[in-house]
Length: 325
Image (cartoon, rainbow, N blue to C red; front, top):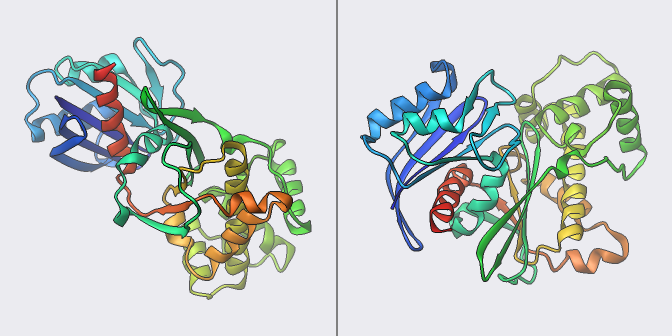
């Protein structure tokens, strides 16, 4: 069967045409596009169809989008969170020559991609005691904080979407309590995503700077990460340390909630950049810091996802599953 998978973010669109048979998937065409070069998603898909030679309906397409999915069936409509693009599954189907089309959330696609990861695409942070039949979970900081749970069983791979990044923030020390109070002042509600994300890292940096001199030049999340990793800015180092500890705390919360003995996977664009010495130790220290439950968390395999194609491959996996249902 021929399938199309897409991973549509605010900045880039990644598209993959593949042929699938059983567990074997062969890439026929893959291309990444800068969204600034196109007026809408339909234009991107039209360019890809010309490049890939799509001239008749495929068996299925599945498009992962960085935006909320409000319906699971019918003519789904999506508005991207960080780009003024809106589109429907019907319009996407039409440009794909009538191919049946479904939308899923971009982090749900990560869940679908987990079983397709190769060993070279992950780095082990904690070996644990892996049980492939147990639940899996993934957590990933980027423009937000995505979470997803996946299960394997007699009905095959199943993915359970989640909005766990929006649960209430729980500070673990006095410094984090001050961050919580700053979030209350700015937003009213304080969620984990407000700190464990790219915008969250910037918020931590600004708050720490305001408490000291308040004279630092505002930095973007990538700039804070680089300055912290290179030890060029004391506030950036402190912000990155706090960020990694909060990341670890929420990863531990997810692990206790799900008990993902199949593996806890850290995805998203930020983790591979910052979970390196010495900051990975901050993450793992807080991940395990759960009092009487520490012994449980020591048994959970923790993997850092280094591939940027997980969501794209997950969309293909989901598309194949939709055909087989």
